[in-house]
Image (cartoon, rainbow, N blue to C red):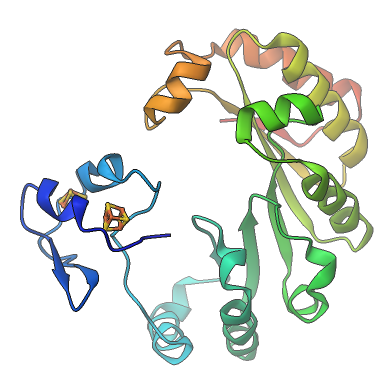
Length: 236
Ligand code: SF4
Ligand code: SF4
């Protein structure tokens, strides 16, 4: 989350940011999407945000309704705003549209029954199943993520699972892909995401290196999915 320190304001090449009344204001018309501000932020936040009420957002959705089957809320982590999501989903459902959640899985979905009733499915990141490795990689436990995987399967609301296949980490990659594909079988899509250095912060590059994962390497994991009955695995 942005802490309004103002550092990114100085680095924007086109003056699309200003610090006003103690908060950073973003001008989307001036912005050229260079992402310098995001690279500058030491809190891993983005100043490229607009504050909107549920009513304002629903008004925008209504304008585009003819082209939509539904909405997907993403982030950052959208579950940080779960109370907002609940009100948004109530309104979006009235329009006859579906509501998906894209999440890192760190919030326990079972504790949000009203939201889960309205939600049509969750796209869940499972970065690693090994608890020690997950802690090393992400700095936190994966206990809730794995609990969510089981829970979403049980309530038939697992839209897809995503795992980034990491370079030179064969054992961890295999452990995660085997675990997830055995669990989900044909009940959900499984996206196997090729690690690429682009867009990875310096801290990540120091841990994982700069080499992109090859398509040939990805195929070995797709094969594991097929062996486990998950025919809906996709390499991206
Ligand atoms: S986005 Fe980051 S750098 Fe910019 S004001 Fe917020 S906390 Fe500071
Ligand atoms: S992404 Fe936009 S707001 Fe951020 S530094 Fe670039 S031009 Fe400025």
